[in-house]
Length: 326
Ligand SMILES: Cc1cc2nc3c(=O)[nH]c(=O)nc-3n(C[C@H](O)[C@H](O)[C@H](O)COP(=O)(O)OP(=O)(O)OC[C@H]3O[C@@H](n4cnc5c(N)ncnc54)[C@H](O)[C@@H]3O)c2cc1C
Image 1 (cartoon, rainbow, N blue to C red):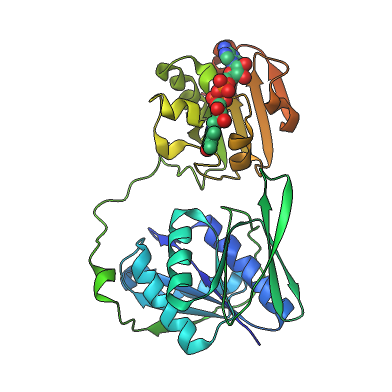
Image 2 (tube, rainbow, N blue to C red):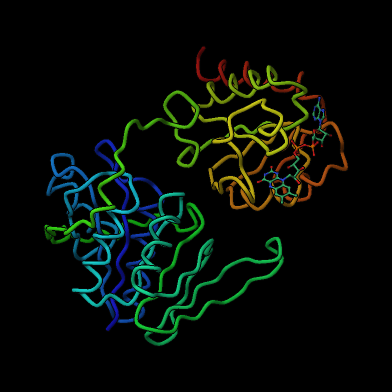
């Protein structure tokens, strides 16, 4: 029966959110097709304790392959996954999205001559096969991807899968000695930085305060930063403003930027163009502030505020701070 191998990204003593969602989904799908869900982690063994790796059993993984290698680089993970899949005969490799997931998944597809589908928002089982669903045509339709061959690679949109604790016991941890290709070890991680927000990574943040051209100028982002700071969230942006140099490209949400799914996405001075929408529409709650009552963003907002963001954002920040006691 085909098993599923899920790549799990680890950093600083914890697994990232979308990886845990991918393990949860992998476990659900594996049980539907009669296989097992295995996870693979690559990193410095000192940071990947037996206990930490085994904790993936709580999300449904039955086995965790642990490979000593550079953390956060794609090619070494491609080597490790290819080796594990060749030996284990896994039918599917699953990734929870993110730039690294895209890069590893594409590399793995090339290495093992496998079919690959990206930006997947749902997967279902039919018999012993998986079928992936990918939104197309600006998310107005869904295409179904069926896999031929021995291995199918599924790369989801970021945070497309819900994290579910199964209450399962510890997963078995198996060390893998990977034979890295000479080119895989040429790149080294020089520095790793978080993308905006003092303690919050934009892709993992529960709250995002996003700013658009309605902020008027680069300095307008201070209003978003103040509110994000009060809410304990991070700041995001539209392409129009990052192209204008008002904010960092790493904060761009949308078709040519990142896809996010926070609990709260507050859009200030953003019109709601389709290319922006595709990157944030999976947010649990969307709140929009726009002075134009006919702005498209109101069509997919849970709460809309028609008004001037220069007046509303500082008041919101004040109110949040007051509620939190300063
Ligand atoms: C191939 C392609 C790819 C693209 N990829 C992306 C992408 O990844 N991400 C992305 O975001 N865009 C992308 N775009 C651009 C996209 O089409 C829009 O141009 C862009 O999203 C608009 O950004 P905006 O909402 O900040 O600006 P605008 O569309 O100019 O909207 C500004 C809004 O601010 C409101 N406003 C103005 N002043 C105030 C005020 N004082 N208070 C409250 N509201 C105010 C206005 O009413 C308006 O609705 C892409 C475009 C193309 C062609």
